[in-house]
Image 1 (cartoon, helix red, strand yellow):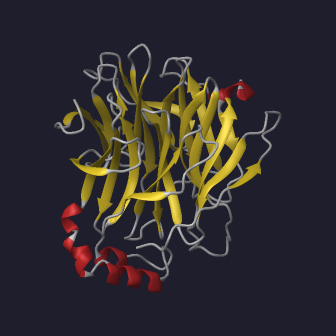
Image 2 (cartoon, rainbow, N blue to C red):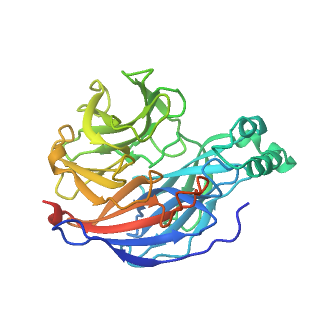
Length: 379
């Protein structure tokens, strides 16, 4: 597996026009590790629980789901620890908070095959690295764990300090929500190539009922993926979805996110609707004033992290797009997630490269960042 964790915290400031300066902080960086795809939740005792993936490279066979905790709304953080680290490549780490305070961690464990790595060209990874991975996935302990391949649910009843395997559960890049009726609601996307799937369960140990499959209306040019969900105070359920280009190109400037919504607790749904938000993937947060915040990364220049607010969860004003930062060195960034620490004060977590050598196409290391900002500075 990956060598021992290292922990580095530092502060940096950026100027965003005439706005007050958000506080940008690196929470985790190991120059030998690709760290990415954060998720955030507030535990029942008030602690913040942050998960992210720590691996050698984006497609290496040895990822782990790492967790950090804060007892003071992100001012200080615990040392990171691996919540899930099987013999396979454990990734995603979406967080869902159940009505009784149970924390759920959605993990996708991937069983890589040697032929997959063998088919990758030198533009992806250096051949010696691929050959090392091919050897790793042929080891007896890796082959013996093949039955773990798939989506799993892990549970914590001590506010994220320890985690136990709870069984199968839908994959979720950011996690799901608890609806107003107390049921769990999760959107998944890896079970069908161009679609997302909607699931509901009464609790973490009950059966996940498949409610609906949402197909991309633009296939074969686009495919839906990496959705997130929120329920607004009036009961409206909103699902936002990433649109990925086919053939894959995450720097195209027509990759606007799509959404659907339900006003009857998920019984019926609108048709997919395009939004003016260019970027991905989405994370939805219901603010204390009842509005809906969507956070997302922009992988077309200028590279950085963005957000937008909706009054009703349906209409979004592109003129009011919030630019949290646009100083990332390249397009390998994003997956921002946000949480409100007090009215109008937001913490947004994401990954991007702290340093990058454009001459080294195999430089895949990255850092987990936290940006603290205030809505009043952008309105």
